[in-house]
Length: 243
Length: 248
Image (cartoon, rainbow over all chains, first blue to last red; front, side, top):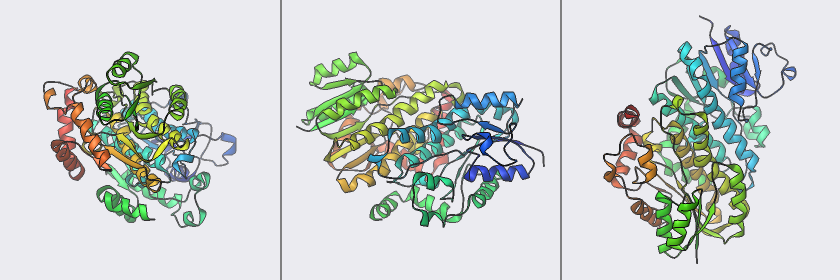
């Protein structure tokens, strides 16, 4: 198989890191975007030629990524996976302004800014943009409303970009996954232990990326759950209300 | 006297909402960036306005204390919205960002802050003006559509989160409305008379609040398009591409 140039955001942890490993073993040229400093990442995946340090909650994040691409003399990208995401768990009235700002910036503004900046690179390689959503976008989520809303917005952005047809777009919705996110946002640990591992989910995501579906949901259970959440709104709302 | 807070109340749908709720005896607080437009509505209605540009977080932070010091809010309507029309790459990144700020970020900030300050009265309604684009898609305004769907999702979660506190949440999905906003952003205005007058839309919203509905799509034609868009997306997407995107 031909070597591809692949950009992954949120690549230092969870699903992003697992995706990076899979593509690394395939021998692809990686550009890994993350917030941590390079010296804290002890893994041959991350070198000064593959790792672009950029804080996606900042206004100028897309400029940093483009500067890195230029420095690496990369002018075409085959696959851009916008995976970085952050969250919050708890009552809406207790969520801080900083948290609302960060979730909006990382989960929605950054994918929008990067998409805008990367379109020329993707066009040049006739590449594909992949937005990593979440099945929560199809559900009412009283404990993480801003997170679910940002994912719903991302889903709709992808859908409309697909209709505009300037670039090839795919939206992939994983279900709950065992990653550092839950610990970071203080979600209960017993439940999260049962979630499938990031490696397993990343494997399925790469399969979905190799396929052609515009919207792909990872796993049969999640596919059904998402269908119910979208098309049987009333029933699902009532179910969430009583739990 | 009950108290209604309406964002974007100096023009269009917001202004019609201010009139409709004032007619029902509500005291109106409007939030808008247009000083002259706000002054006009204040003269017509005896409404009070807070001038703020909802694109700016600093303005939101400045407005909040005024709303928090005011009377408890019985109706909060997130109506302010902007659009940026064109193919996604052709719209400047600043304009994309502004659409997210006004349509998506500002309503969430205001809602969270007013809930935190306990300014939303028991039995109150919070209304979010989303868009029919949530069902039909809206190529040529991808970011606008994204913010409106995101807002609908937020409202849906909020509706369940706030039910125990007896706060009602309603999402409105208006179709084309006869406003200056629509005229500015449509590829052609030859069929403007087909758009719903804002007064009529405001009445639908008023009735929806009275009946404590959670979700309304005002107008029979709009409801038909919403159903088509929900159950047969490719059909509506094709139509939207022909009617909007290819005429830009």
